[in-house]
Image (cartoon, rainbow, N blue to C red):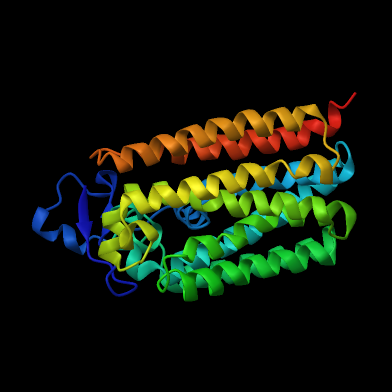
Length: 331
């Protein structure tokens, strides 16, 4: 790969020029004069990357099960698709605006070093406009195709993630991910309200599961990339606390999450499918959390925190699959 300087914003990295764009006869000394002209598809791919598709996938995993629990079965496909589309646009808007606001620290971290605003393949202005337009489209679409309650919740999710978490909490407090995680809990409420037009205690329980799940999901990742956050000046808990203290907090939140998840059984009158899944999956989550804490207390150099990080994704996905299947498999 050869690079050329491109600086749409301060502290951005040089744009990578694919070898296919460099003529074979080009003078290496003159390569810096070659402009980077990506195709439409490559540019579209970079803008999609701003939305953090993997995070959106996890958010949508909680939306459909919430809808199925509210409906007591499978809701109309048109409603499901409209809710998922609006939720995708809303989450994409929040993530793109997060990339825009965090571009100064993303350039300092290896984990985020390939994001479009860091490499310069998307300009800050382009990312800002893209994020704002996605947000407007998301709220308007949900209001017209679903209902006003879901649209209002989506708007709150965008504002809380962008302003509450990214602009206020992230760089000021080690509890940033705890309270900032509220935005990621809202798809449970959006899914329920899409079906009923209102809220109830059952979606509040689902909201609480994701809320209590977020710290023991994200702190292992922060342990793995502790040096990244320290270099960027972001006070994630693993930056300001010892691994023992962090793992202790992970265990506390994990126990609270499992206990809270069982409240759905009496509140939503769920059947054995969900109850068994909550107990088995919760037990596996707790086992891995305690293993991490044991390694931290023993001073093991390789804590292997990503085992819990990846396991937490499996836990949430399967638990909400159980939420979706439960009303279909009650006898």
